[in-house]
Amino acid sequence: MGSKHSILLSQEEIRSICEETDFTPKQLQRLYIRFQELEKRNPPLGYLTREDLLDIREVALNPLGERLVDVIMQDYGDVNKLNFQQFANVFARFRRGKTLTNLNIKEKKLLFLFSIYDRNHDSKIDRNELVEILKMMVGGNIHEDQIATIADHTIGELDADGDLTITFKEFCDTISKIDVDEKMSMKFLN
Image (cartoon, rainbow, N blue to C red):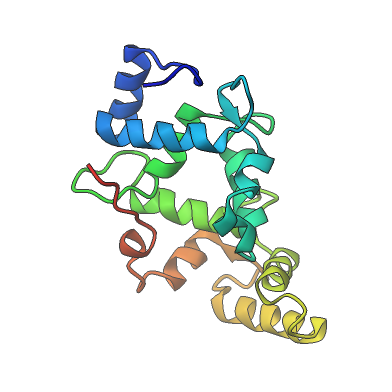
């Protein structure tokens, strides 16, 4: 994998990433090409930055785009750098397929989704975190008092243990009726 404009992966790296992610070598090659397209530095340094990901049109248009990028960079990258193996591991969480790996099991998808809210990593979504994400989703379309009321109501509905937060278990219980594997999966062509 590679060209004169890229950092080459060794056969051992390819084998290791394929084994960990369950991507086929052909799928991994496509992912590597996309990785190279996103890294616009010349010569390439072999990693993506937060800015590289924010330059993706669909990410830039998504009201939660910056938050998604923050989750990827802070939770799966290394000091605002995401190398190809880390990039492949993030995408493997959303890989649909007959074979489950440690990366694409339902719990990992739920943890990724939960981490969009839980940015202080205390395994709970508190009122401030919920208000923050609601503001991102609705922008200036709803008054702050209304957003706070929505957050309070949501926590009141989901908080089973009365601690005024939403734990990971409460979060999972709430969305248990949703087919997370289907909704949070992408089909990677062979």
